[in-house]
Image 1 (cartoon, rainbow, N blue to C red):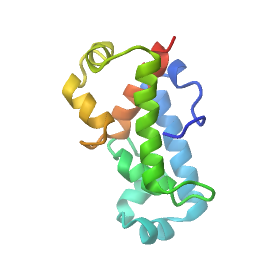
Image 2 (cartoon, rainbow, N blue to C red):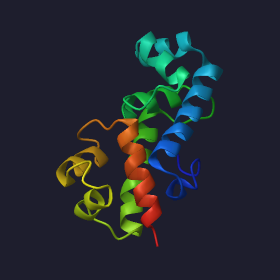
Image 3 (cartoon, rainbow, N blue to C red):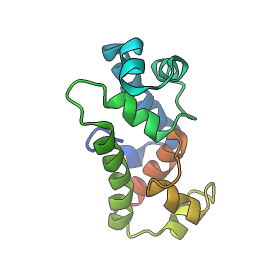
Length: 142
């Protein structure tokens, strides 16, 4: 989700990477506070509390970047969203991978068209899906 924040993403399983995301998000909630994040983002309290508790697998990337953007010294949510998408797109370029090979590499858990739409931000991506894609792409880089 953040460039340089997960340098060993390709060496981690999607589950481990998801846990790492959860740690960063929970730290942000702890630092900023649930009420402040609710006020700044418009997310409901249950959603922000889920981030605080590390219950993030079904939360979306949009929600996660909204939370992260409230943290001190973080860019705004749009910049974070663009960076998260760029990490996947540039990773695919470096790994010389298209959406069909990516789908195959993740055992067709997502269809190629669905992957493309999610990576491009045209369809919501859950953090579990993002971790799956991020882990696989980084692991395939040459």
